[in-house]
Length: 428
Image (tube, rainbow, N blue to C red; front, side, top):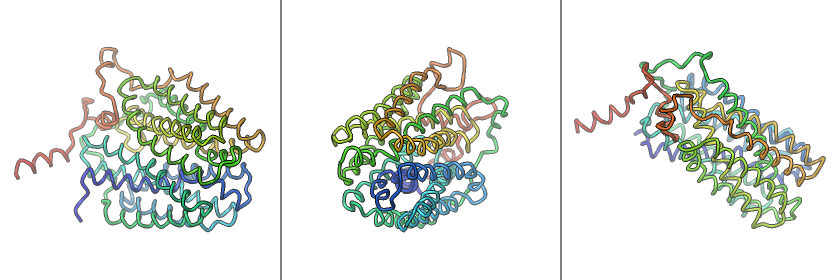
């Protein structure tokens, strides 16, 4: 079968990300109200279950580079899809917290394996000059998946089992497509690429600060991802179907997050980090203050979606910049920190909701977000360099990928795929 073009790969990757991230991971909060009512679960138990896919995501992400190297991109993506299909099917048949937790845990493994598989395939088959655009399109798949989940709530109100069964069918279709369309290659590192800096020479101070900011962002955002729909239904008295509009707003606004993150990396990352984290906190406070007002609730979702996707994109670029030459670590380090924060925050929010109520719990997490936003001047930019060079540094996701692989002189490595294209064009 003819290999996918750069555009085709980007679209196909976005579809797989939509299934593995949007449906298997982030759609869960959308169905918390009916699941909690039918299975009789407390907010604390929901918080524990909500943390399980984040824990399994961390575990899967930690071993994903090894699995990808041994199985290759195609089989790793297929394995990811099988975990997703199994987890979604388990959720659709859940009769209690154990079965429900097993399903969401399997979905987290799906999420943790998919992006490393797609990244390995991209690095081997897509020209390096297109990596930034391809990655931006694939990352937008998360928002697309969240949007796809919305009709199931609007038209299958209360029928969460049927919704998850339909998600499982989509995951199976994704497995078949991955088998047919993805290459079987493993991650390819060119022989003339410079070795990554020794561990002792890494910018540990910057890496620690990036991880701490990403962790807190994940902690704060966990309140919205898991409990926002339940808040407007329980505290605001809105019908369950209205929660679908929340996730629609999150998904639509999230599509603009990649653009904001790219602009931020080109200008002033610390200021943008502070602004977006303040917006994230404001979305929680606004929802808790007016849960019965559907218009304000939808506006809070727009703010949350834009802020969350912008921050994850910014953290992605910073991670790549701070770890040149480490293809398997730079892109995933900040996402692991975000997931660790979400895994910690989910049960904490559940416990606070049981103890103090939704409004106070969301207010506490919003206050934490504002406090950390004030510390944003400590957010790391690019690797330290001479002041006269700092103003000339290129920014944006593509620039980060361009400098991910370097030669011994510290210059961006030539891309053999582009050389092949030039040769083909010259001989045709």
